[in-house]
Length: 581
Ligand SMILES: [Cu+2]
Image (cartoon, rainbow, N blue to C red):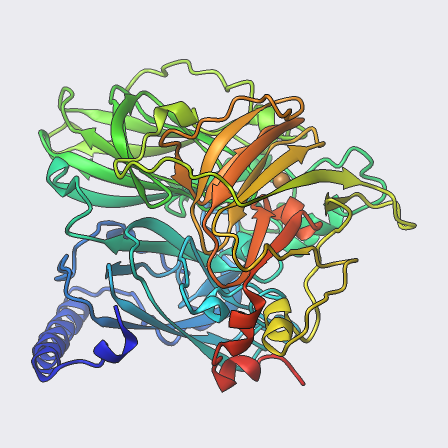
């Protein structure tokens, strides 16, 4: 899609007029109806402390609201107002950071080829800069729109705005967006990003399309949890353990387990889904959490995996899916069981947690209600699952991309050691990629510097790997010296995952180059290794463990590709202005 072809044609403008007048008429009708039946929902654009935090389950049912799946590109405009407020997704009230007064945040639903324009208004209190990262988006020729504080931009200061503007080419499937400033997404700045494509290949294999976001949930703001973790007394490096888990932003909580009786606690509600007997559902499963790995299942139903991280996979039917932080799967589920009510289970794998939190019920449930069933509360028996011993991905050998591509030979290969070490004077354990522990640059970003012609970076905090300009395929061997596994995410790319294993990578380690899984987030096992290959494109790309606590302690590095092209990028002035000169 060329940029100059994007301005709307008269036909499109007329069409847009018709759409807008339809939208306006529908809005007016909805308003009248809303008033008539006494709906109390407030305007989404003017949140105040007194409004209840909004959860809109209807936004998780895709292709509603007259959305049309088409290959005709358009521009979609959004406005995100980011505020700090109280909320109680599971009935336990805490301070949250949210977009448009809703949690989970607004759905971005679009078609391949669409231009996405999001004006982000930072209405957070002083000192809290923010950004939005579009997880999994390639950002081809728009690396500055990747939304990563300290890497591709400076934070949007409180009271100010920044408009993201990028085009989604050659990508379809299931993505998400989240703040990439400190640990803010853990506090509520998250939402789904779905890209439709009429040529995705399996649109005829399902009738309904729904989003299921699962996440762990902490009852403290992320800076408080981080302070517990980043502490010299925490010699074992025990990561904070969540108090709960959520499905589409909801769950119950046992208020008796709450230690502070002065904090309002109502016990919450569970998410619920309605199945029409005989219909087939595409579930877009997204782990938007901070730390916990989940195993997802629906009692009595097979799950057929057809997509991982935006890449269509040959169908494989399984009973439960392990999903690491930041990963996504599309699962096709047929409502082919006896009409009744069934539990959807997202179970936190406690073998991946550093300690037991008595407040945590690791079995996170939602109700799947068949239309016509008696009652709504599931009574399906507990399948008696136990937690997998290892905190690893769904077996990569189960995932075969439909669009088969063998991993090409690499032009350059790098060996990277990931570790946690308490070697500084403060005795705090930091994450290292080789000898560098990442922390974001202040008042600038590596991309800003690279665009201005800077070629060397502060190696204390920035490990910037610059492959040769003519390297078309880059290989990374990541050797993990930590007792925890790490779901690594490469910004702006999907990579081939050629192999993972326990122990040390060796030159005779068996690599699978025959149509291996391609994804954007893959797990390096505890005391193990992973080998990935990717085709780099110009820009500055963060490569980091997506477990928030590990990332914040420095387990991150950057790939800089073709610095001369980065220097030639005509970056927008408002982007430059984010960094104080
Ligand atoms: Cu990690």
